[in-house]
Length: 433
Image (cartoon, rainbow, N blue to C red):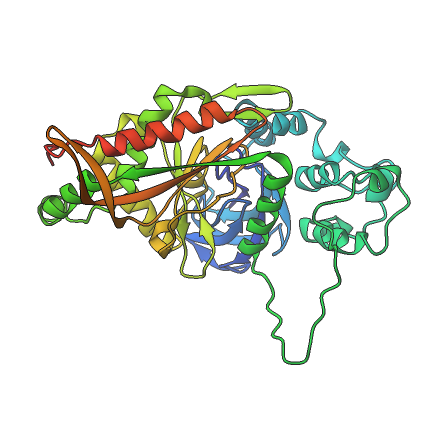
């Protein structure tokens, strides 16, 4: 028999660690190659991890709740001695680390470029701190001395993300004497004591809602939000869809919503205004070559998730529609992978699906802009004709464009949303299927 280490897999281009949610198998169970063995949560998605080899799950190395770095061993699988499967080299985690450094954002690369985890200890207590914990500490201005005083509930007393969030909740009431904590108070600290009566129901946030909450607060703190509005005439698109939706479903086996039209127009406008397709890294502006458009999808739980359509500018309307339907269906059935959620450079949110005429969406970091599309409503409007102006019933929709005023000025933000509206209004009624 041979023992093979099962390593924490890389689950996305910017994922450097994952949290063990549930082991689907227990020690001593027989497992097949590619059979799901455990569930892992990242900061993007929950996903099942398949076995890398067939055999017996001999030993579980990472407990439920542990935060494990990509490339670190999580279990030992006992395989047949003559199956030709080599035992992984001890240098494999280093290869995974080099790959992450090459693909991850600059701040992640800086973390991974530091010494091996065994040497990444705080001088005062000798504990290991994960990159995520260190990132939170840096963002919340928690000094190394203050970090050593935080009780850890992880393996070997390690401080977990939950420990950090719990500490931040009480930090406001019992601040540690630290210059940094006094100078810059955390935006996540409670400001007002909430009054609770006997008739109130207390609902604990689930993990996804906690992440959404933290990201929204972070975005409002990081970006200077400004929103511009334009009303677009959607009549051509509405008429085309009504005329062709049955034929489209017969030909492609699925329906077509309005979302593909929005994404197509946005992708065209980004080509015209590439400085909207950027991100900010400190004092540097990163101009993105690829146009990867995220679309916000509401889940049955009420939470929100944003899968990404990569290279949207290289797809036609049918291609975008197929991507939209696939991602939306997998999102609602919890079948998305971390890669489906990574790499977005611009985002669109359809608030019109809830009957809202407009909204002021919050920018998903590190992007610098997001567009909300409202409900399409019939309105009387002045229409220019060769024989003069007339009042006609038109299908109108508001576009709400939120952008980061640190790097996107009002001229660019306003011209961009106007260009998107122009592309929507100019849609050719003769477009074929």
